[in-house]
Length: 108
Image (tube, rainbow, N blue to C red; front, side, top):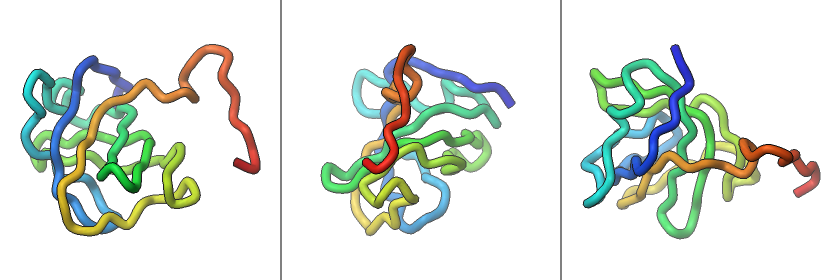
């Protein structure tokens, strides 16, 4: 398992619940999570424009899913978001936590 970052990865999902994210088609002009490679980890961001979650996940090419291994931050007090039905967008962000000189603020 390798940690991979790729530019311009953004896809739709209709995932609900607390499990792995089922990945659908890429948005026009973007690439799919297959760019990460099977069993590799990457950052992810998922949002329905109300709730959001940023974390580290592992891509599985045989099921075209992304596990939600570690939540870095979220609209659910930095815990997994229990997604309701409906369309969401999943992307590979460059989170502030990964930026040189950044730090974690406790008591957000």
